[in-house]
Amino acid sequence: MAGMSWDLMGHDWAVEMLQQHLVSGSLRHAYLFSGPRGVGRRSLALRFAQAINCPQPTAPGIPCGECRVCHQIENMQHADLNILQSEREGDTLKVEQVRELQHMLSLAPYEGGYRIALLLRFEEANDSAQNALLKTLEEPNPRVILLATADDSENLLPTITSRCELLRLRPMALEALALELQSRRQLDPERAQLIAHIAAGRPGYALRLAEDESLMAARSAYLEDCLKLTGFSRLERLVFAESLVKSRERAEAKGELRVELTYWLSFWRDVLLTSLGEAAPLANLDYRREIQRLADLTGSRKAAQIVGALEHSFARLNNANLQVMLDNLLLQWPLIRD
Ligand SMILES: [Zn+2]
Image 1 (tube, rainbow, N blue to C red):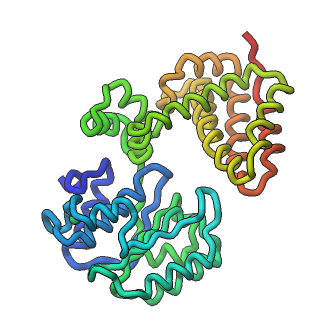
Image 2: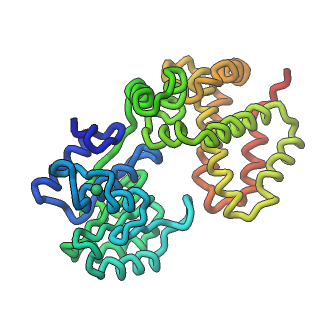
Image 3: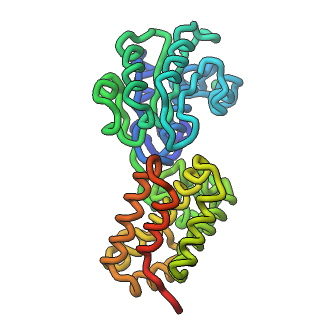
């Protein structure tokens, strides 16, 4: 099976297509891997980069995964792999960065293969950065291949997407992902189910959760905050918001809030689905009882209002006054006392 040969979870059709381009000598100049965060866009792009430049493929289009080149590409440290991304997630990718990359791409590849540019989270590029890249796409260098990832191709300029081979990556079915986690990572069935649900079928995200115990611990802490807050008075909520935002630099507080809001949103979506009696799978299976209780006490109208407010806050993280935003958000939550 094609997917097996690249040792990735999911996206078999995409692997097959990329192998086909490689083996038949019909590589495009630019590829765009789109899909939700954690779906495996970067892993697929890196495996493709290995397949393109591995000097000792085990079969046509299949990287060995063991040579120095494969290792260096996997670790994003190969001399012919140029990486472009914003400083940290949620920041803007600037035109100067694109210019620097273009300078690198004008150099011949060190090892005689292709020079590969990996542009991560390219939706964070502002319009002038995207326009600057256009020149590279319009006058492609035959020894250069661009691989870009983005959450949604709709968020990029059409002049960019129309010049890329677009691969839309989707989450896996939860059952299939849980089975993969069991066979590849030796997770017991219950834990595999839990992680597949938390990741909402996104294999990249699921792997990180399976491999890094601290991510699961952080998740629990965020969900405990979320539960605790529903029992807090107005004053206690404002104190909580202040402690989260005030003691930190803005960039750090924003990064923390981005993660915290992501988990709160997944929790309140579960509450909303449950209050509506929907059969859709819960993200947080291990909090089933707390979710049911909040759904009973809150009702679907209030739950929908909170989900809306969370989505709104999340979208405004870059521009809002974080303290004011968080105050407003938390004052809308219901007060539930035992
Ligand atoms: Zn190799």
